[in-house]
Image (cartoon, rainbow, N blue to C red; front, top):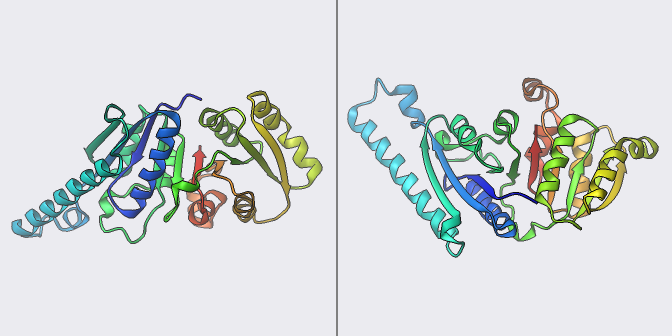
Length: 272
């Protein structure tokens, strides 16, 4: 277990607050450093109409933006009070929210992001979990809206399809979990075929000291099978490879990763 440097995307809204509380639970578990980053560009109105807005209106937008960022930082420090001050950090960076977060994330072990909130008041401060999971090269934990981090237990469901992204996701799960933790390896298909496909993963996890079981399920809607199994097994986290197919195709036609992100009720560790 070597997670020592956790980055959480934080803008003070309800989604970010849920992500922060979950990241704090993880930081305490691993005795890790916890850094919040508020990445933001200009308010959307200034991007769209900056050349046509009166100076007074632009100043008002800037002031409101600055006030919200100050309130977000204050809320962050209130939330992490009690955690060692030498292990808590806060960054405010200017630029495109997704791009700046991914740039900062290069120096961290793990990124924690709240699920996208369609009702957010400050869209220029919103980070998109799907974009970061696809393009950052970092493992990303996406925390559902309304999630209670008190339910964050050590058991994991690993969605296994035998592909490269799933293998990389397994590697990150090994870094996150303590030996002896329970890992359920889920495959979708016939039992005989599932056992053969999952054998390398099961052997690897057992050799790392985990308690492993195979769950073989049938179903044409793979995302639904994954989500239902995570709920039935009462796992603390769902671990899966992300975007094996082009993200554009997933956006246009739907896909397993997108569906899981929209409907998951537990944190999802995504690795591309």
